[in-house]
Length: 257
Image 1: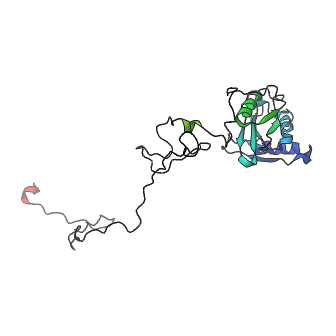
Image 2: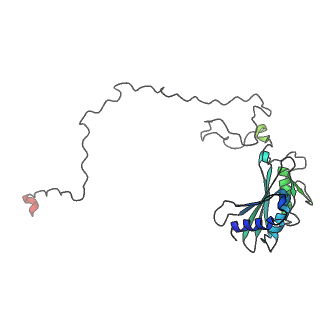
Image 3: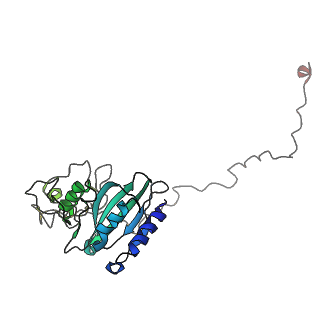
């Protein structure tokens, strides 16, 4: 099945099941031939049921769970995305739903795909999204005393302010090491002049002023003398098809023998 057929098939199967819970839309991801996937957006209330239909051998047969993660969409909430694959029919599906930022919660897929357990635990600690009915929803990568969710866009990357950047150059620096423009801060990195131990003590970068138009000094008269007329020799004409050949040089008596 093509990605378009996979998406249309899941939309048709969901259309007959409680349509009042929200609309379902299908599309196709990028990636080109052989890498594109059907993308089906479902309401959060139909997330688990849509995954059940995708796993059904009589529907799409997506028996392999690949990965699950989330995307921070700021005021719009979080997109939760799962990639499912059919090992027999060789097609994939990106199942996506959106949860509100104030109360991010969605049904767990562990009972359908046991391999989703670690992915949901990581998404829970990185984004703060709760997966209902997960059997062991606890941090996977971070220490127990860690506070906050590092992959949320409002999370402050304090170490970039408290510690020097370990890279060779800061963003905005040239190959020679001198800053040609104001340094750029990645998302989540606060201004060290507004937050951290150097608050109010960091000098603002100096931006060299560009010369305005018309400041270029005029060339002194006589510095570059004008070329006298007729000094430049004329270019020889190129050989063109059909041109007359030059006359043969007459031979002398010594060359005749």
